[in-house]
Image 1: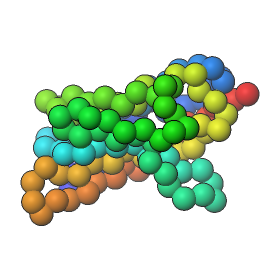
Image 2: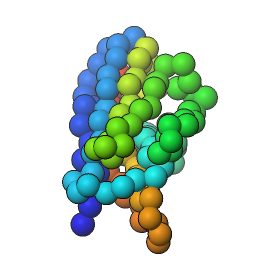
Image 3: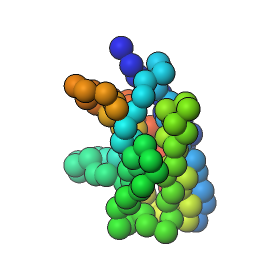
Image 4: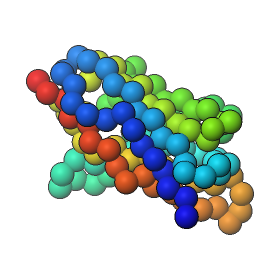
Length: 117
């Protein structure tokens, strides 16, 4: 069973920066990889995604502040978060979908990011 292993969360002050990392527990070739987040009582939302060739998409709320990147050799995905705001506080989830068919989706267990005002 493949697990998406997340790291890098924690507590940061508003205006600060934080970098999240995610690597699968086994070397699995991933197509799209992404970061989602979920606040208590709210639906999980897409933060940013990146395809294998590098094209990216971002939620409007994080554009120009967050940067998603990946290392295809490691099948890893990263999220650099700058100018953090209290409203960025959430549990962040790593997501990946395999490059082969039938495609299989994998989710991380979630990592807490807390931004204090």
